[in-house]
Image (cartoon, rainbow, N blue to C red; front, side, top):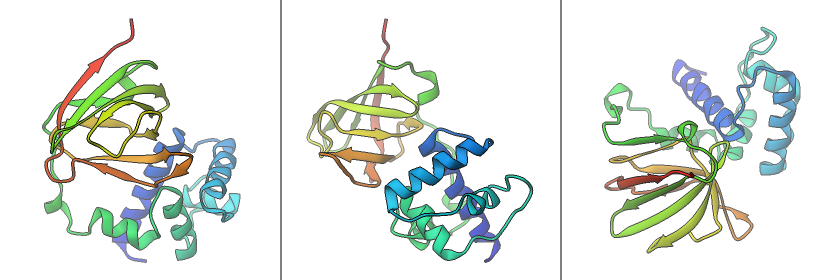
Length: 193
């Protein structure tokens, strides 16, 4: 395992923490994570293995590729290599600051609505449910339909939006990308009174 893999493992851990809305600093968090992984992949990862990956109890370990593949599957990738390809390995040149308008889930209250637009002529209004979760209220010219649910930590104009844990018609679609070419073009928030 090289240093780049360590960076991807840290990113994978962040994705899992966001998906669970937990910091992984209590033993019960790992029990919850283990159940989440099994529910999503039908594979069992041992509690001690999960704790070692997070360096919980100061017993770090370099995880096996099987473990990394299962963790990657639980957040919507085919395997660890797929997750690495998605984020690329070009280094700092492929990164940049987000300069558009940003709406963070932590700044919203349950019931608040976010309307976003992206090209060509797509529009979707979602309702915040809490814990980074949203439900589609209305949509135009998109595959997202009212009643679909997903998770995201934030919305930003000028950047594509990746939705995790998308549920459509009682089936998981893993990850879903909005605005691949031009990003989200418009973003408005309607707060609950």
